[in-house]
Length: 305
Length: 297
Image (cartoon, rainbow over all chains, first blue to last red; front, side, top):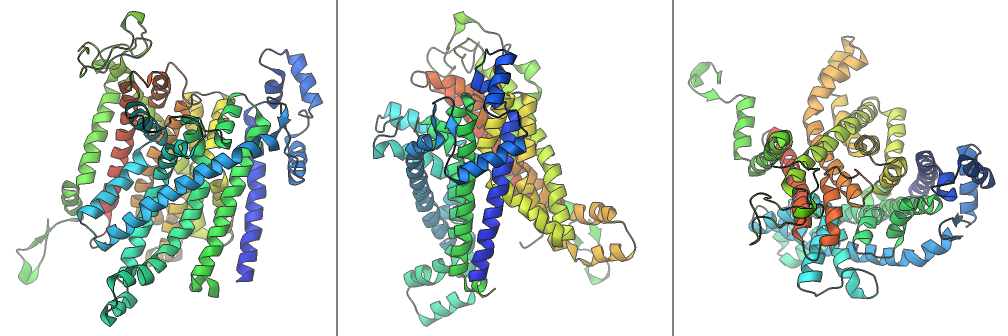
């Protein structure tokens, strides 16, 4: 067990390092940070001066090693646009993104698991078909469009909910629904298939034959086993969701790191973008790591290997 | 129809093709998805003939005309006009070309990359599999939407750039599915037979492995077309994908955002178009999967 976890941690660290390198290269090769620093109407000479001043004339590899070295010591660099440490900019906004992510995730789970379970108990009925329709819609509806639809309906026509900002809990309802809905289809399908498989197994038949109550069979015996892959997919989805949250943050003007990333891309403020991409990757990798470890704890078959 | 000998001489069994055809005729999702998609493709192809107006022509006298189902609507502009007086229906029809083009082109690029990676990992196993798996987990760890947005924005948005970025970045599902499907086939008798009869590896992969994973490949391909379409729409919606004046549906939603309060239909029309296109392709893909699955699964 410990060896398994140890191996996973080493893998996760390796993936994080490679990802940090690749994203640094991609972003540095796509845009010239010196032009952004010098401003749009700087002459080539001025840009060259800036390039030398900030050390941007050296090979990208050298810059990467320096950047990652400083980052590991807690120095995430300075945003030329704000003239502030990137760490402070992100520190002030990450909380909002995590709240949004958590609410969205809670919504996704609350939608997906009950529907998945009910669909599996009554396969090929109208409930099952409704669940399927909800998941098919969720996969096809662009989340920015869903967000705008909710703004038009609940914000403008009914005026029930505020349409932008992040001041009160009410501000998080529509964004969380828009973001969470997108993550729910895969969770729902996995719950349904898992439940169907477990409900057809021998030990459920035994439990039924023993005369156990349906409720106890469904929740104590079936769901506990069917939920294992859903839990691990859930963590992965959470990491993935944070990576895609920027569109929802943009639609609802929520001051999280995603919105900051979009604005920083528009301003060509590369140091900020670099750190946010790195942060989101590390969160995703940690989430998959947690998923693997939980999986190992919950499933004795993995534990034994 | 195949004839059988013996006492059951008069019974004819349907050929595999007939079974597929029969299943397709009964599959609702496949039929609905196929119909919507054919309609959208028809619109896209015949846009130069059928579009009532030039999608780029601005006319400040005819700004913000409402669609025909409103009281003040006019049949001259069935879906109304945007804030620059451009005919919305014509823009929508030309926009279908952009979505379809980006979806298919990005899928082809990512399909080639993903299939090569996945098939070699599944076929060779061992160290090749380890390396490919590592590449896939690294790719998955990148917040791909954000990276795509950054690259397209920094390099400069154009149709070509969007297609290239999406194609080069979003091949993970191809790789995963092709790897799994090839693994299942690797130890099949007919693959071993081909090996013993001295076929080259490339030939085994092309003539023994590929035909048998083609169904899965088609299903993934449809899913990947819609993913590319959705990401393009998102990037364009953020104003950093396809650039104006091209009538990308995502960009149309972006341009309509400022008129959300008084002209919500400006968002609804292109938004619904994206939704309809994506759902039709998804239904078609699910249908292909169900129809081509062997009996009883």
